[in-house]
Length: 315
Image (cartoon, rainbow, N blue to C red; front, side, top):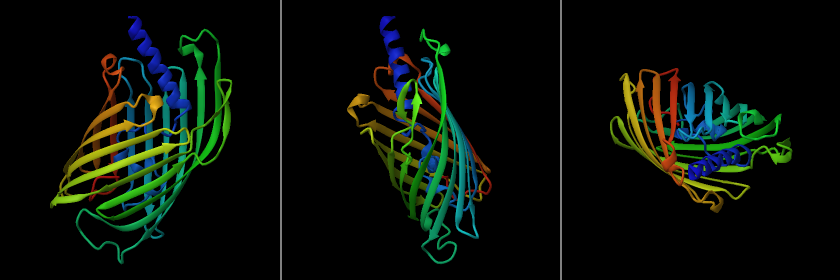
């Protein structure tokens, strides 16, 4: 019992650390389906509009943090401009981080005409995007074992910048988050809203049949707290725009490289289906550390609607 209680306290402190010290680490397991969550230049990068809802519950059985996001992105075709927005709520029993983001992106086609191929691969395009966002961080001791009767709430601004490039099957992006060096008085201390974080992702879609692709990708992120994280992904997808059904399966390997995290490893299988313009997916995150035997893993569900029949699954 004492060991289980210690593990629970460790989980709570880790959750608080995620909220306060490392806000821009990857907390979405299915961001590969919506790279806009980590790179503003993806807003409007394809010709379809996307509405996506995700909900994630961490460490089931240990009252871990939960996260919900609602995002929308679209493209103004006549001006090669993209618009994106999302709202989110990320909470633990005592801490709550809610916020919103508004994004403008500009896309530069690098091939003549609208498309040079009717296959699943994308044409060449270079995109730039900038996001303005606002956080509201709050703390309430009533929901914890903290004997002090304390609560805090404060808002803060921030901004992100990103570059995104596609060339038929290849895609890559570089983004930098938390560009405004704003500090706020939170839990009695001056704490940054979040560390400046750089995200780099690269991948390539290989068409192995007329309606089937194999897509390896890698993501690396690094922040000013010297936290480093790498993720390797393998995805298989079957999709045909003239059909009402498609599916994808992915396996991700995530490794935190900083010593303070104990270098935990996560394995994340993801399954998704498309029926018409509606897409549904589920991700299970198994973290291989001391918490693994005391919880039932992390579960994330995604529901998306595209306003056209997608020629490929979203990025």
